[in-house]
Image (cartoon, each protein chain N blue to C red):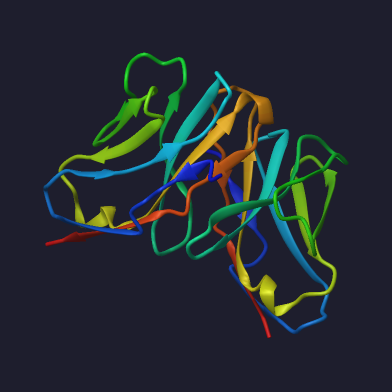
Length: 113
Length: 115
C-alpha cells in the first residue's frame, strides 16, 4: 500500500510567520503535488514536482514556495503566512503508469490568525 | 471555462437506492483520464474509479460505475445500493496528456445517505 504522510493534521499560525508543511511518501514515486482545498472550489494545484530539485508552478502558486531535496519528501513553504491562506492542504504522489491515480496524504488543516 | 463541472453541490439518497453524481468536462485533448475520489469527513481522499478516454467499456469497481458519454463529455458516477458509509464529498477529476500528470478537480458534490 502507498503511504503518504503529512507532518501535521492541524496547525495554527499567526500572520507573518513562516510555515513549513512536510509531505513524505514511501513508494518511490517521481511525481508529488501540493493542493489546497476550499469549500466550493474543490482542490487547486499549488505546485508540483516531477523529480528531485525540480518544481513547476500549478494554478495558484502565489505566496507559496516548495522544496524537493530528496525523492520521498516534498515541502510546501508559506514565506509569510496570511489569513487568506487558511485552508486544507493536501499532498499527493503519482507513479509513472498512465492509469495511475494520485495517492493523497491525510491533509493538514492550517489556520492563520 | 471550467475544466470540470459538478453541478450538484449536494445530494440526498435513501439507503439501498442508487444515486448518480454528475460530472462534465472540457478538453480538446484526445487522450485524457477521468477519476472519481471520495472524501469522508475525516479528510482523506480515497480513489474510487478511473476511466480512460480510449476505453470503450464503462469502468466499474464494485458498487461504483462510471457512465462515460464521450460525445457529451460527461463522466457521471453511479453508486448502487447506497450505504450510510457512502456519505461524503465526491470529486470528479481529469488528467490530460497535454498537461502531463496534473489533475484538475471539480468543486465536489456532498452526498448524504438517509436511513
